[in-house]
Length: 475
Image 1 (tube, rainbow, N blue to C red):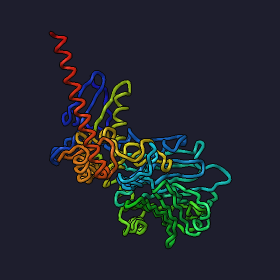
Image 2: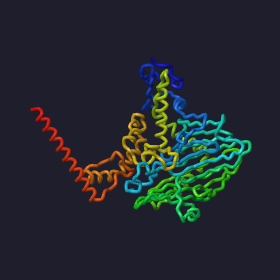
Image 3: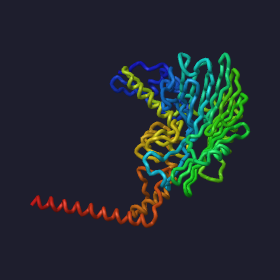
Image 4: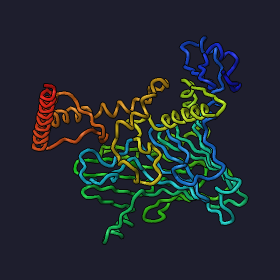
């Protein structure tokens, strides 16, 4: 039988969408009708429906991996708290620290990518902790794409702006005695180099060596904006990223805090101001990733936080109107399935709108720097699990990064088919870097084909021997 359905579905829903009865489970599948007349048949309070899948914490996350995700499809972060700080790690789908040509990371899980920098918003409060106790509350609205964290007189609202590569955080400080707020931008990695410490401190840069691979992190200050750039090099390979942070609506001062951190110190005061975090990436050494990240901030700086919030809410509102699944059962299990279904769509909408798909092992939600299981390559069996059901979910545009990446490695896959299999087709490995299989030296490719041919002959010979044995037994 069909259980009572929440009132955000109007009475007409019974005739416009047929409930599917599975025992005591009520399932209603709603697709976007093709005409205005048909749309008028269904009136759904979509915001209330999607709110069933919101994340809501009455106590701080115990681990960074439990933070709340926000993103615009290209850049993203989890947002978590410590008693005195709001914390993030900015990640991008198009930051690749190495490609298929690398030979510097032979150990499993040692290759990395996607991370751009740590961001901490520190609330100095000597009298009491901010994000703790009964005043703490953190909430993620999937329908609007906005995260809110509250505690100790501080309210922070954060979003991934739909109009550009910017994460915006509005801080409302209503403490009785406001104190300075510090926004720290930190390197993901640091390697001490004997004899070069003075140079590193002077240049605010650090070069992390892994065999022939280098990862250079460079802090900077430009006109009150703090920046962190990364450059990855190995032989002919190059990739880069940049994060830029500015404060709007409150006076702030930029300075270097230590060897790994550049800081914006925000003047104390009651009321609101906005932290704008822009990012960019490029695989072209002649392109200025820092300038591109600052340009993202400037594009958002002409808007208030409310304006950025309206842009983002409009994108998500359109996203959610494209289709929905409502499920209910007395046990609550069907409701749980619906909540996770919507949450999954939110994660994909937040991370799958760039030139590359989010990598299965962490997506855009890395929090521990370069540390991740399974390295930085893409595993097809895991990746396709995210994408196989987006078509029936009416979210075809989220498939574009997947096709874009694999189409981009077409030439490499054709060469691999020729070198490794003697085929004129293409060979797409189960496990591959974003740019496809590596090109083999000609002598190794020839040896590999000889080996495959030898193993093939052995296998055929084994089959013939086994068949002869079976025939003799049959006689």
